[in-house]
Length: 142
Ligand SMILES: [Zn+2]
Image (cartoon, rainbow, N blue to C red; front, side, top):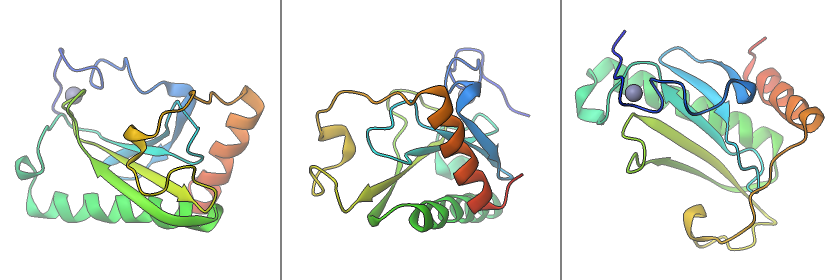
């Protein structure tokens, strides 16, 4: 498995294990630390790759299936107006996909989440466990 010792994801600096949802195949899913946008999930590619073109065609196909699977699960759980699926990697250049439910109650639905100023929301342990369980069961991961 490909690893890069200068990468925050490979070095397990982020995301934190207590936000782990489950293993989807090519990726592992984690609940994003800041839950201001409820259900915000991050899919982390297991191998260190920075660009889609470094993957095989089959891996790209599998990756988009996993992103879709999580988006569909989140859409079942939340009152979703739109799912945002974002692959950026400017801050941490290791393929990770943000899958973000934009709810009907969204404070600024026309803007990308990065442009919506807000105080970060950290879930209490009980509420975090509840949300992880809800996403796992909807995904069929036990
Ligand atoms: Zn990495």
